[in-house]
Image (cartoon, rainbow, N blue to C red; front, top):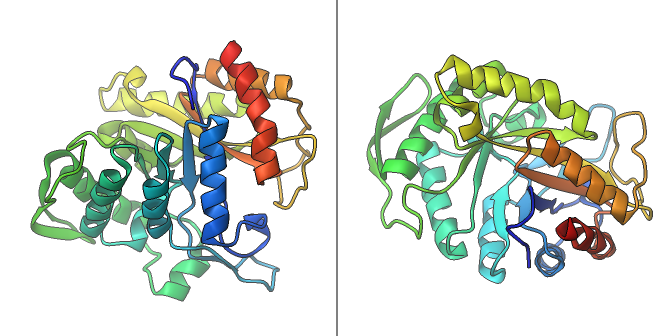
Length: 307
């Protein structure tokens, strides 16, 4: 079980699908085992990426993923206490009205444990493969988020934009937290930061390696809040982070320099450092991202909770 006494919440990224980024978590049974192990170990949250495929330049292998929201609905049904969410859900992939309906449904299944984190997407090959428009991603995001925000907050929306529209749309029935599902925008871009500051409950940044990387990003978020007249303290902050354990396998390419291997006490200190940089929540890519890695990390959680 996780604890509310922590200075920040600790989440686990659950890889899933095929390819070197999945780390052997290829099936529903694998994802289920990960989720249950994370809940037992004391993680506060579990997260699933919203991608359909990866085709990286210079590589011949197509990497695939199970559909994010189908997997989240299943995880919501087989866990009891851990929070769940997409990391992050691409607004371009689904009609925003339908996405709001899906979100309300999954929050119902989880009994109020879902956080909706959304972004504008970035990997053009999957857009082309599935026939999703890649142009004007920030503009499409801004309109889509306005619809999702209106539906999840008020339960209804009328919106006619350049790219998106809904006509007298309603969300019924409502789940256990009508109007209160946390909404997070994942971005470091100026337009989406403005959207986050104006309408969201939180901000998230993508994969980083050290606490010092947060500082300039945090300053940009503060400036975006101040520009729209919002107290920066009212916007939560989270980040996706890498942590390498002594038995790492390095299946996933990392930025240079190579990350240091950290023992449990060192990882606990690192988490304290992230909290000191103003984060409320971290989503961790463990190396090894495996059941053994989760078990090893549980020692860090024990030390972290002792303070």
